[in-house]
Image 1 (cartoon, rainbow, N blue to C red):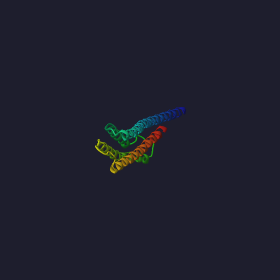
Image 2 (image 1 turned 45 degrees about the horizontal axis):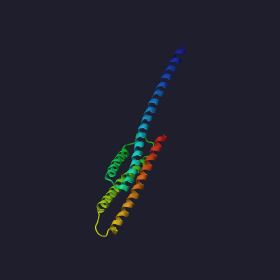
Image 3 (image 1 turned 90 degrees about the vertical axis):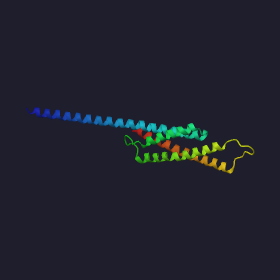
Image 4 (image 1 turned 180 degrees about the vertical axis):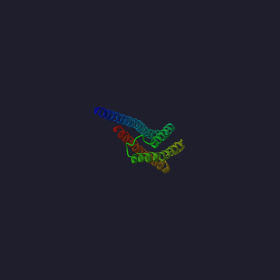
Length: 172
């Protein structure tokens, strides 16, 4: 007769342990899903940052409207991805905030570069007579080169930051 309470206690403990194990498995599954979601988000972020760097270089070299449109599209997508809250906190919020601030600063620089390129293209019409570059044109070319350099450096910073975030998520 003393065996019945011990067996009941054993069954109750086993059921409790099974419930605990089921709860930890469910929690692990949720964490894994959140990590996979975050991994996909930061991989897209890193791809967009790399594409932005390539499009910046493309626009700096050729100044085509297609490159400008694509740059704007990729930048908008990058900003949306940075505005999306992370599914799981893997990297410190300050890292994401710095990345977001750097990416937000790219748009005004690109707008200034696009205006400068459009001005240069409009001024490049064939001229009659003596065809030398004026001091204003030289200053504008130097300004454009400075904008390109600054934009490339900042875009590279965003791209490097995005790859660091992707690496941190992948390490989890």
